[in-house]
Length: 322
Image (cartoon, rainbow, N blue to C red; front, side, top):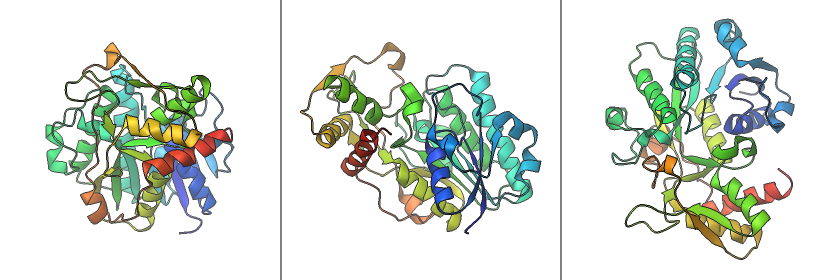
């Protein structure tokens, strides 16, 4: 598939930018879609030799015409702020935008790979299985998560679908290129800068009985593993469907902190701070991808980067100035 014409939404962002970078490295022609007019910190993705960049609103106005010569769509563009409260904006960017793109891909016969989120699982009381029939039971904790679940559910109700589609519920992605996300950047990014500046890392104290401070656990996945999976699904597609994309192994924030201190060769000093009031009742204390369908139905069998190795690679990248 050398030289394929690939459209990537959210191309000025974290994961989509890293994806675009890899696709260009492989010799593909990347068309990047995003809100490129935003006045934010410079992003290295903007300097990538893309075939074309298209402002998101222009793309929405001329979608079918702009998709006419595209071989595959990677739809990663979304409002990802888990604290956002503007329901109309979230619905427009995360649901209606995705629905329009899905419909166009179905009409034009274009494969579509898109980003969902592990946030759809809420507090995890109904587990982390990605079977479609379990979706009605899920209870997201914020508008962002609800919008992702709404789109997942909508795709399953559609009679007309792209020739191949795969929706991936990203778990906690970290790695090079996320600094512009500010508060939404990973704990690895924040922790690195905290340790560098003060010699300590700040983690949320637990306010849940039976869980010690820092023992909240997440499924942390390195961004390059995510990119590899997305590209492989396009090149060697398994069955169409919605899949978890995580390592399948939950690790504690204490483990994360120790990995950072080891990679930075700094003495461990962890400060536990109170859980912010705005997160109480909305904080995921545990996430762990059920990867059975990813491995079998999607057919993705590559190993995932262990936390300690991923953190060490990320620290090396940050030390160069990122």
